[in-house]
Length: 554
Image (cartoon, rainbow, N blue to C red; front, side, top):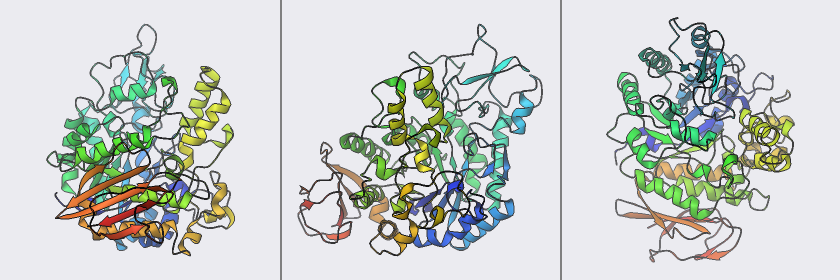
């Protein structure tokens, strides 16, 4: 197993608008992040991934970029960013930027120029097509609902947007577009940033001829159809050769629909493209049986299915690629609410159990802000409480327009799966507005902030925060955790997730009870091992208490 710095790292994801407000306008900002760097250093992480901080009209919370070289004024200035970068590096923390180059904002100057005519210098920067029989060029549906095409009278053509209409897709077939993107990467890397998380990067190569998706068409089916296009390897290899290979970076490509075999093509140790991918397989489990509803459901995930998914990636990439390990992020509900048990009785144990399950695997772990505190879903009950474009659009489409589901049921689905669950402000203390801001926050704070907050966690040596700190320390200390081969145990056990890691003659045994019951389990090897970490004060051998985790080294 080759050793590169990103394999030894733990990444902490910051959603800037919800992290810390320093100037009391209700919106998190760069100076707020600077204030909290000592907290992140104490946790023990190595890399900070920032969600987009560029100038944006915020139709999709910053994933619609109007200028890649300017900071969103709500977050501060370029001087503030330079100060953040310098202070982070002083603390030996790296900064990973979010690179969104499948699409831009419709407010970006490139698009403003492109839509004027068919013969201007930017006319081919986006994907334009003539109407087909007076309608859209094909039947593709956008990820946030509706058609993936919008008509522009000035050009008498439609442009493609796989997401919101305010997010037109760039035309990567145009060499000038690729060079413009590479220039943006150089701009930030020359500033000293340490790498990129690349948003939906496996959508940049569209199918030749843009054919129809086979019926029945859904937004998810459109994404799968477009993903991993025939020129993707070529584009990523060119990016690496011309830009990334000249810097010591961490690169992770968000790749919905990708399989382990796809990931090896893009991140294989001999491919020279990206370091790792974000795959979606485990977070898309338990979709609605009605395919028209896609991910919108409120049913728990079956442990056997979760194990099968994660095991497939662990064994599939071993020795050939590298995994990114995550339970949640800005696009997913809170981990303890989705995969664990967020009731007051079991929240802490199950949050720690989930952390152990993930952090003992092979790959680079990602912690989403507040995950280390056991932050939960928001528990919203009314549509007006939601802000996310995806949630609001799909409610209107599925309830009001297509009458596929009733409003009460859809609200239950949103409460379980909406991206807004992850976007409530960080819970720093039991004080006014959870210590996030003295002003009214841009978005509602979770009602449970007086019980779940960083101040309380830091003052309790048995808190989930310090459990995460121990996990990170162990990962830095033991090569077997970082590089060991992964061996699943009892894949059909629907209550316990157990596996082994083997490296340099040593064995790591990881045992995780995913239930609220006390159960018995015995695992080889029989000889005495050292208990590296557990989320109960004592070890009761074969007895596993509710949401108990144990890790032994033999």
